[in-house]
Length: 123
Image (tube, rainbow, N blue to C red; front, side, top):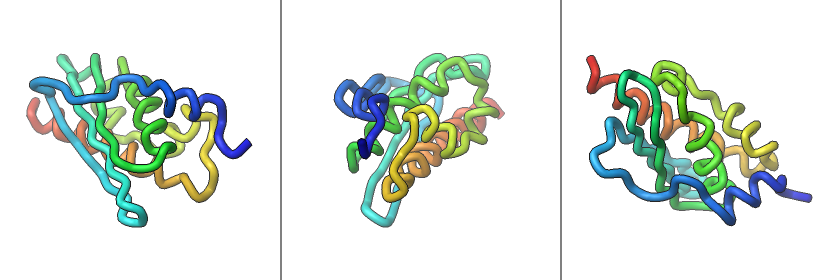
């Protein structure tokens, strides 16, 4: 099977998709190879993510990665999210095919940018 059941489930039933009113931080990243884009909205009072929402434009694995990552960062400190590595996102999906690893890269980049935006507001 090309995609894991976890990835397919997140693609068919994305969690936390959509915009957020008055987020503490917004970040996005783009994969120039195919134009995939991920944008994250974070709410993080006291430096801890209590809500993460996303918008994505791109392939199914990028949508699934954003969904899985929105759950992955819940309850984590912003300084931890600001260092999120793509491999964590890939693990949350039970893997990605080699030609779709950019999905984890773009999602992790967008989350890092959103966390940095939150941290910038606090400082």
